[in-house]
Length: 95
Image 1 (tube, helix red, strand yellow):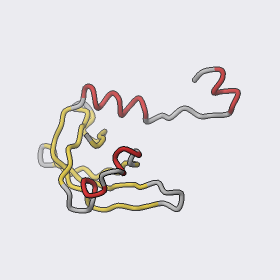
Image 2 (cartoon, rainbow, N blue to C red):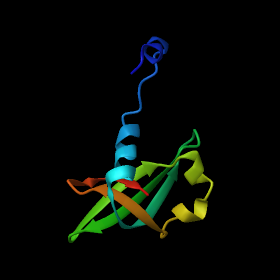
Image 3 (cartoon, rainbow, N blue to C red):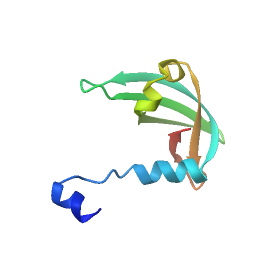
Image 4 (cartoon, rainbow, N blue to C red):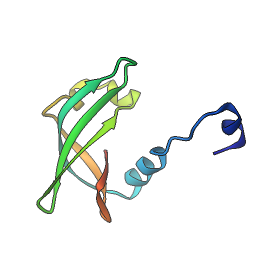
């Protein structure tokens, strides 16, 4: 966190580095959107499930503005790509 951000009281996004790491180094698998939720402030959260080695993983993610521009891609029942960390298979993000 930089000094300027500290002085303004801004907190760093702890998930930004994780997402970048997974997009660069993660393996990809298929997943399915199981539900969506829109918050009062306009944030949209998608819930998805994916399977690896016979184990089902369920996760959620806050959609970016770019992802919100294509609502059919993240509608319930839609198939999506999921990037996951092979060392920690529960750590994932939408590809």
